[in-house]
Length: 121
Image 1 (cartoon, rainbow, N blue to C red):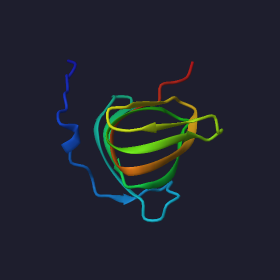
Image 2: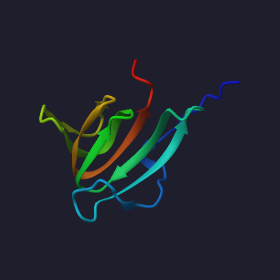
Image 3: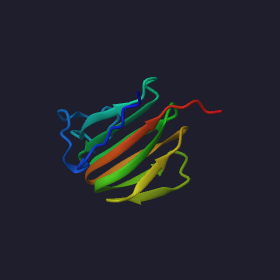
Image 4: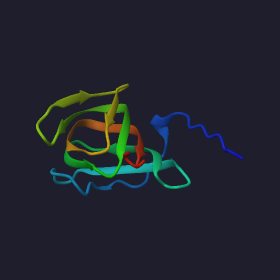
């Protein structure tokens, strides 16, 4: 049987403890997250994430990510210098598998994320 799941009020989903952001370029930047769902093969994950202001690098070579911004503001820049995007509440950011770059969080951010590690074919 397939289990239908719903999640309400994503702005209030409790998160884990805030911890140092491993790829941060800003001292004392922290993040927290809560995993809401993962597929049986663990290739797709959905969760809520928060991060304090600062800069960090991101690597999506192993899996793409879809980010629905719930609150906060950031600028996301491609590592190849090919462009950047300012994002904020209500925006959907698509980071395709293979993307690398940098985030600058301007205002404490909360997002819903979907990470998909489906094979590139």
